[in-house]
Image 1 (tube, rainbow, N blue to C red):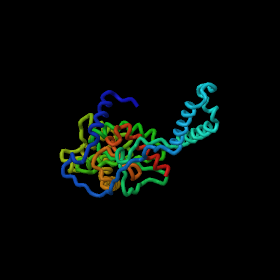
Image 2 (cartoon, rainbow, N blue to C red; image 1 turned 30 degrees about the horizontal axis):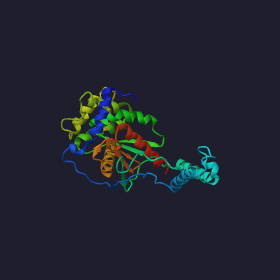
Image 3 (tube, rainbow, N blue to C red; image 1 turned 45 degrees about the horizontal axis):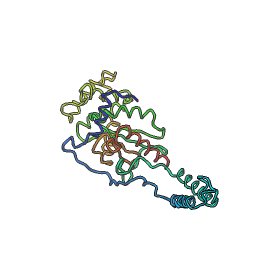
Image 4 (cartoon, helix red, strand yellow; image 1 turned 45 degrees about the vertical axis):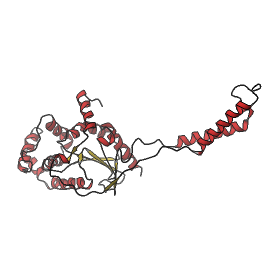
Length: 302
């Protein structure tokens, strides 16, 4: 995927300031969740007995070459003078080569560095054979906005066994207001069409899509309804979705998930209820999605 110079610069900035945190909104409280532990995935392969034996044979071969009858042997004829030594060396070399080929490549990801393991693992809401990938986000977060084009491209190529779900954070009234917008538009079957448009309205057009007092639901609804008129959604239709039971239920679940996973910054990814990662831990936006793919593949094999 090609990115403009401005987009590239913005993604670079994401490496420095990797997430929007709830601390940016004073008065937030943290609750719920489980403990997290860290560690490494794999250690480097230690020297094997075959490696040491091969080195011993090589030393013997050099000694034999130095002390043999050099007048009769051509250079490199040590094997001819000592066929047993040559056979042993050949056998060890073949065994070592086979063992090296059978050794799996060391993973580029380190637990506790690139991602965090969730202990205990949390239940997911996907069918058997599927791997759940959650993205916690906030429409007002510039880092979520910068990452979103990559996510949209990734969605088109992600494995079929990955079920991707966006979860808006619910830290403060401002977050709840845009979370309600997300679920209301989703309930109308328009989220695929309007998700990017919502981001653009906020970050390009400077419209926060939230009332000056975000705790005022009527004000939030009016601001959002005015925006949605441009996409053929009537005020009446949006009003029904905005106050619907489905939206209220979705908002409650989003809040529970945020507490369960102790999400304190966005964008944050959770893979199959077991692993948490973000742009900073993965060392880059593209690497984050590669990490998500690898963790999902690992879970799918279980």
